[in-house]
Every structure is written in C-alpha cells, then in structure tokens.
Amino acid sequence: MALLSKKDTNLILDPLADNNPITIQVLGICSALAITAELQASVVMAISVLFVLGVGNVVISLLRNIIPTKIRIIVQLIVVATLVIIVDQVLKAFAYELSKTLSVFVGLIITNCIIMGRFEAFALGNGPWKAFLDGIGNALGYGIILIVVGFFRELLGSGTLFGFKVIGDPVAKTGLYATGYENNGFMIIPPAALIVVGIIIWVQRSRNRALIEEN
Amino acid sequence: MSNKRLTFKKRLHILKHRYRGKKMAPAFNAFHTFLFSPDETTHSGSHIRVVDDLKRTMNTVIMALIPVLLFSFFNTGYQHYSAINGFPENFSVMQHFLTWDNFWLGFVLVMPLVIVSYGVGLLIEFIFAVIKGHEVEEGYLVTGMLVPLIVPVDTPLWMLAVAVVFGVVIGKEVFGGTGMNILNPALTIRAFLFFAYPTWMSGDKVWVHGAVERAGTADAISGETILGYLAQNNASEYSYSVSDMFFGFIPGSVGETSAFLILLGGLFLIFSKIASWRIMVSAVAGSLVMGLIFNGIIDLGWIGQGSTFYGLMSFDFWKHLLVGGLAFGIVYMATDPVTGSQTNKGKWIYGFLIGFISVMIRVFNPAYPEGVFLAILLMNVFAPTIDHYVIRGNIRRRMKRLKQATIFPKSTDGKAEELKVETI
Image (cartoon, rainbow over all chains, first blue to last red; front, side, top):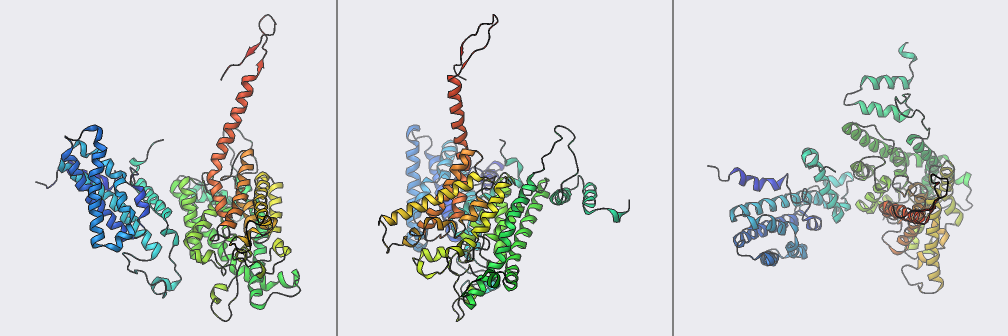
C-alpha cells in the first residue's frame, strides 16, 4: 500500500506546478519580491512558511467545527500570529544576522495571502491529515519559486550563492570577472524579482497551454 | 530565363515561395519584405496602397539619424584627443574637428556598438518571428540605430548585447511585438543598462573614450559632462561656450551632443510628417517652464550658493535644451508613435510633462544627472491614460452639444416639427 493515496499525492504535487500559489494564483508576491535578493533568505523564508502553513492548517482543521463562523478570521489570525512569533524567536535565537536581514518580512508572514487563503479555502473544510498535506504542498510551491528566483537574483546580481563566490571575486578580478564580466545591479533591486517571476510564469504557460486564460 | 539574369529581389521571391508553409518561411519572408516592397497585390478589398508604410516611416527616421551618427564619429575622436593633448587654442572646425583621425577613432569605437545592437536585436526578432510564425516587423530598425547613440562610447559590447536582449524581449516581444509595446524599447535598453551597470553608465569618466582605463594613472583624463559639473556645483570648472553646446563639441553619450543636428533632424521629421510637432513643441515648452521656475527660485534668493541644487538650478533655463540628452530624447524618443499619446490634445499634455519632468529629475536627483529617459518612460506608461481622458472629455462635450441641439425634420404635411433630443 502506498503511503499516500492518489488524491493525497495530488494535494502536495498540484501546488508545485499547475496550481502554484505564486505563478498561477498570484498570491504571496510581496514577500517574493522583497526577500529573494539572496538565496539564503529565500530558503529561510520558504522553511518558515512551510512550518507556519503546515502546522497552522492542522490547527485550523482541528478547530474547524468549534470556530464560530463570524469570528473565524480573528481565530485564524491568532493561530498564524502565534506560529510566526515562534518562527521569529527561533530565528533570533539561532540565526540573529539572518533575522535582521529578513527583519519585518518574517512578521509579515501573518499577512501572506497564501496562508489565510489555505486556511479559508481548505483547512476549514477538511480533516487534519489532508489539511497538513495541503499546507505542505502549498508552502513547497511557494518555496520552490522563492528559491528559483533567489538563485537567479543572487547569482546574476551578486555573483554568489549562499554567500559563496561561485564565479570568482569581483574585487580581485578572478574567475569570470577576469574576462570583464560584471554583476548585474538590476537583479538586486525588487523590480527584478517581478520580471524573474514573470519569466517563470511565461515559461510555465508556454509548456502547459491549458493554463492560459481566455479573454 | 537564365539564373544570371535574376535580380536579387527575384531570387528572394523564389526562395520565399519554395519555403512557403515550412517552418523557416517567416525568415525568408521577412528578409524579402525587409529589403524590398513586395510585388504582391491584395486579392480582395481595397487595392490602393499608401507608400508610406511602416518601412518607409522607419527609414525616414534613420535618415534623420544619419547626420547625428556621422557627427558622433568626429566628436568621439575629438573628445578623446582633446582630453589627452589639450583643447585647441583657436578652435576651427575644419582643422581640429573634421579630421580623418577623429573620424577614424570614432568609427572604430562607435560602429561595433551599432553592429552589436542591430545584430543581436534583429536576431531576436527573427527568432520570435520563426517561433510565432509571423512576419519580421521593421520595428527594430529605428531602435537598433537609437541604442548606440544613447549609450556612453566605452560601453562594453557584451553589456550592450545583454541589454538589447532584455529590451527587445521584455520591452517589446512579451507585449506582442512591434506596435504593441508600452515602453519605448530603446529607452528600456538604456534604463536596463543604467540600473544594471551604473558604473559604466554614469559618473565622470565613461563619456570620453579612454578615461576609464586611464583613471588613477599619471595620464588620467576627465570625462565629466556639463551636467556632471553642475550637479557638483562646479559650474566654473568647465569651459564650454554656448556655441560648443549648441553644435555639440561636448562630452556625452555617443549621439546626444549636437543640438544643432538634432534640431535639423527634428525639422526633417516634422516636414516629412513622421514625427509629431505637437509633442516636440510642448516638450520644449515644458522644459523651459521648469527651467524658468528654477531660475526664478534662484532669483528670489530661496536657494543659496551652498545648496546642492544651486549649480543646476542657476543654469540658464534655455541651456537645458543644449546639454545632455534632452534634445535627442524629445526629437527621436518622445515622438515614438507607438508609445506616445495618440490624440492631439493628449500629445500636448504628454510632451509638456516629458520636458517638465526631465528637467525636474535633472535638478532634484543628484544620482541621475540625466533624467530624460526616466521622464519619457514614465510618460509612456501614462500615455494611454491621457488619451483615455481626452477621448472621454471629447465624448462628454459632444454629448452635451447633442442634448442641446434642436432638430427640425419635415413632417408629412410639410410643416416643420420641433424635436428635442433627450438622451442617448
């Protein structure tokens, strides 16, 4: 017997590609623009959202039958705020420098549309196991885009990956820089993330034409 | 008919038919229509064709750019040699400027920019035409010529190539190709270069060939532009006269220096009815108004000599048109029929704001001593909105007139009958 049924597998795999929260639903764009200048920050952000969304979906799913409908948004906010504070404190304790780079954006996970969207659309109507898989799937879909964007922005903008100088030293002019190559300052600024995300959407839609909306 | 007798045009025509329906068909098709006007006539509908098609429009702009390009050869050489050997005491155009040495140096430095710009740009156009299966559009003809004229002469060629790929793909092709773009592709390329490689696109060295390599050595030369001096409040340090600025014997981007030749090019475009005189006139007016406001602020004594803005604010308002890329931008960029406003009233607003904002960015943002490209890109974005409100205003005005109008149709017995139009 497989560990996951076909339906459950789809809960994880769909958000990775054909129902990606960033490129298809266009949610969570704000943080995707803000923190993807470095790959490390992208990875940490992806893991944070994975934790918040995975646990949050389970909690909301368990509480779904006792939350009064009128105040469900407040309850959801409390759950997500609690989880975000945990993430924030852990980062401050174990990765202080990084938490300074991510600064306000960890706190802003609370307002990430993907999280509230999944709570509303999925966790309130499904059991905890399904909600967990859905949370993990969506967070992975979000994270994979963040990491791809972060990879290109850091490589082209700073010439590094995770802070390692993979293509040579721009000051000492070694490696690729010896040939006259220079870092692309455009990739550092947030509009570049918008263009990189746009190119990913372009590639995705030309590979799968069913995704193109009719208008 | 022997093969030798065939003209080049005919051979292309034959090739085109041989490849009809195949994958490479658009490439041959494009090459054919790119060089010649096709013989084919329409099979239905109207049979009359106007000769000033897109290709002729583009070629007219190219013609207006040729004098600027030739001047840029001489000026590149002149600026380089003068910076090294000292500026001539009694400057004479024939002896010091129009020399073979100047021309040759400029030719060797500028032509690679032109070739890379056209080569890369047209390659992208061809690739997209083959993928999408449409004709190659002539849109890149002008862009390809504008790009080398608006970058500093020492721009590395690979940077230009990267920027051209970005500008053509993101600036034009993703929107659907020529005629569909929101932003001027040449300025998109310029903006990309500016933000991606600022050390090569601004500062006090890149404007004269050789200044970057010589920096820090005993042979160091200055490549500072007039706007650069002004931005640092060093107005006394440059010695260019007004006629130098007007005729263009000053450092700057490759083709932007000669206000005189740009003026001639602009007149040519106006009289050939290619570019809109409304945009040009209103843009000039906009920059003069903004310049006058700044001069007025200085005259009132609100800004003292110690202020960072003093140099640029006290610069005579009409001289703004002579230095930097303002004249070039107004004549060749702002008048782009695709990205500019389409309505007559809209053109006045669009042009005025380009001039106004250009001078404002120039003075207020020390990081961008040249704000023309930003101002034009900004107004490119607003052009459809301007047009929208001009058209809405027009409809509303005519609606009002229609409501007030009284119409007297003859009734059957021949008596005039009064009818009031209520609402539409």
